[in-house]
Every structure is written in C-alpha cells, then in structure tokens.
Amino acid sequence: MSNPPDGTRGRRTQDEEALYQHLIEGVSSHAIFMLDSDGMITAWPTPARTLYGYESESVLGNSLRELFADDGTAEFDIDIDEDESHPDVAAMLAEAEDDTIDDEQWHQRADGSVFWATMTISPLEHNEEYTVISQDTTAKKQHERMLEHQNDRLKEFTDILAHDLRNPLNVIDGRLDLYQETGDPEHIESIEATTDRMEQLVDDLIRVARQGNIVTDPEPTDISDVITIAWEGTGGTADRATLDYETARPVSADGDRLCELFENIFRNAVDHTESDVTVRVGALPGGIYIEDDGPGIPEDIRGEVLDHGFTTREEGSGYGLSIVRTIANAHGWDVRVATADTGGARFEITGIEFL
Image (tube, one colour):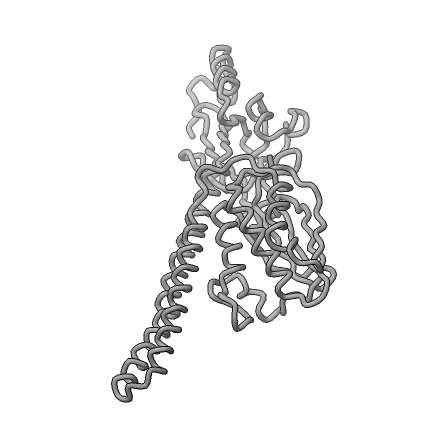
C-alpha cells in the first residue's frame, strides 16, 4: 500500500472516525473489528462482543489468533489438522495487503463453544490497519455436511443393490434352470424363499432411504420424552432390561426419527445380551451417549457395525444400527462406536445443538 501524500498514514480524520464507528456499530448480523499491522485487535465493537462473548478488555491488544478454536472441538466431532487449524496470522495479513481475503475455520467463544466462521480481512487504504468481518456460518456448514453424508449413503445404497440383490437373482436363475431340467417343486420353494428375502431387503432399503432424508424442518424436541417412548417399545418389553438416564436439554430434531434412533440402539443392547442388562443415556459436550453393560462390540468389527447390511446374527437384517447412523447424519450429527467402562457397547452421538 502506498503512503498518502500528506503524511497522515495511520491517522483518521474526525469524519473518517465517525463513519468508521457508524459502520462497525451498526451491523448486527456480522462482527466487525479492527487489526493493526501485527494482527493485534485494536477495536472491538458491540457486534463483536455479541458474537464472541468477549469483553473489550480481554481481547484488545491480543492477536487475531486467540479467536481461533484450539482443536477440532468435540462439539462437532471433527479432527482439525494442526497446520490447518492454526494459520499464520502474519501470512494472512501479508496476503491481505494487496487484496481482500476470505478464510473459513472454527472460532471459539468466551464460553468455550465453537462456531464455523466465515471471515473477510480487508486492508484500509490509508492506514496500517485491517478490517475484519466475521460471520457465524455454522448452519451452512452443517447443511453441507448433511449433504456429504447423504451422498455417501446414496453410494452405499448403490453398492448394496449391486451386491445384495445380484446374489439372490443368481440363485433364482440357477433354480429355474434346475426346475426346467428336473421339474422338482423343491426348486420353486427355494425361489419363493429367495424372493421373500429380496422383498425384505428392498423394504429395508426403502426404510433406510426415507430415514436418511435431510431434516429440513427440525422442531424443539424433549429428549427425555423421546427416550421414554423408545424404551417402552423396545427395552421396556424385556423384564431383564433396566434404563438409567440423565435429564438432557431439548434439541432441534425430527422427534419420530430420533425415537427410532433410540429404539434401534436399545433393541441392539437387549438382543445381544442374554442376561440382565442396564442401558444408560447421558450427556456429552455437544452430544449424548447410549451405553450398556452387555458383552460389547469386538474391536475388529467396531468400524463395520454401522454399515448397511452388516450383521453378526444369521437372522439379522443388518439394518438396525445402520439406521442409527443414517438418522444421525440426516440431522447433521455424527456417531462413534466405543466401549463403555463396563465393557459393553457405547454409542456417542455428537454435533448436537442443544436448545
């Protein structure tokens, strides 16, 4: 940037100062603040305090870097690479000397919560200062993640159709050939059983596909009510099953689909435990967990139990736990399979925004 001819570089006139104050104080949807040439925060107006929660005295004179989240933030269950999460502020400002630049990453509020921030840094023409405009675009980021999850599920459905339906079709084709050769009605019975299995598979796929539709109109939902209803329809039907859960804050969700998510996890706990079983539901930072004190899930299959069609039981369809992931992803949430302290199965659902 070139110096102004009158040598007033770095100083604003009274009119410029008034215009500046009007600009940064008059925007409610964005946080606008100022940086000096070293990336230190020099102005922290009301919109910035509202978005970040920091008072002026705690940020003025500190680096822009202090606003960035320190990790992938458990609230969204995302691992952020150290280099990507901690950009070089000096390099950003050097790039911004010539033109406005945009940056997107996780920022952290005073209360420890995080949000996905879209940030624009622009140089001031006659000053060694920069204007920063920061906006909370978490909702947009979550929607993008939901679309990514849905695309992943669509690809998975294609693979399932190509594999799981081809096998029974081959059986039918082979049995028809044998029936034409022998006239043995046993082959017709086998064909009937195979078509029944195909019908069940198609029904399961349709069910999963419907549950995977992105939740576009979530409503405030009381988790305790959902858990009670889900337990009555699954775990509560078994005398040997006990439910223990903590009261959680309401969430923004599709209540019916959330109920089915809990039902499938509860049913999994009961079905895979031959003796008494206790199921616990509790809160996590930005999420909830559901765990049991049953035999647990072996580590070598833990990464597969949420896949469509995966089952360890001969009579199982392999869609119970996959629907858990499908419903969670439709809300923009993530699911992780772990081991409870008791050795049982533990499911952690993160990325939830409590109300």
